[in-house]
Length: 249
Image (spheres, rainbow, N blue to C red):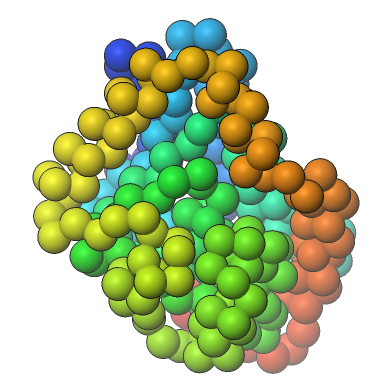
């Protein structure tokens, strides 16, 4: 199967689905498509609520594409790559519509950042999370503001330091990333669609105003996340990171 980003609209709910055959590990072009799709859905009058989901069964998003990371040869290219996740997070933050996350499986690195940037997140019991960046010689710099905002700095640092450990979906719920965790994908999908369609019946002006309130104090993120992307883009050039990525290729 080939990578894709699709938007489908049902009952005024915009379902954005992304997919990459390599465990939904995200290369630059798919990240760009995803950011553009979020902006488009936010401006579509037929869409009142957005559901963000991924294709496949057991992995929501495996983070950055290691195959693309290992090919980076200069700091500017590195910054541009990590700006892909920054642009997705900022598109979600600035979107005037509420975004519900549907996390059906594991989330790693940037996948945790995307989940944290949703306004409300529902997950399956298989949706464990991991911040593996420090173990490959970089760090979760770009996604840190979103993860810390949702889960707190202590949980963020705990996951960052234990970079090779998956933390359970229940841990993510306890720390505020997930609102609810479901035993089956079917139960998850029913809850997601039920909540999304309920939200479409609410006053859209009130919903939009509340979205602004939810994200108060983040107006500087365009600059902040660009600065963080520059740090990651520089670190990915280190010998340590290059050698580590080769083992995962």
